[in-house]
Length: 130
Image 1 (cartoon, helix red, strand yellow):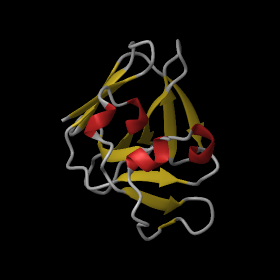
Image 2 (cartoon, one colour):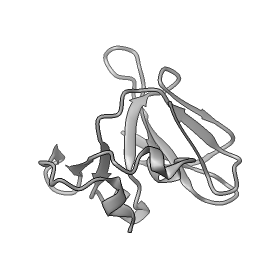
Image 3 (cartoon, helix red, strand yellow):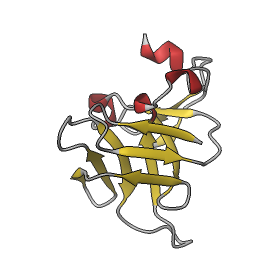
Image 4 (cartoon, rainbow, N blue to C red):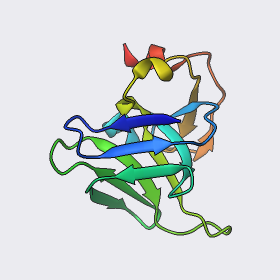
């Protein structure tokens, strides 16, 4: 299990999904936020505690942030998947112990142009942080 929180600690998340990689997306929102995402499903393997505010982008995704310190904590899909679950992702840059994710490979997602996964280039989270 991986745990994280916003800077002030009022919003906390946990993810219990198996993490094979951390996603860096270049869409118009993610590139501005600078988030690195780990995916799961809301209230199944992604749990968030604390009050958030949201920015709704289109009809597909809500980006949630702490109303006190403004850290982007997670996103959640607006619509349920066919299996009845709601897709969600946590911002791993907020991991309580960065050492726990430093060696995960980065998965690049082209959310700007092709809306498709790009090949891994050998970089890992620690290469994106410094």
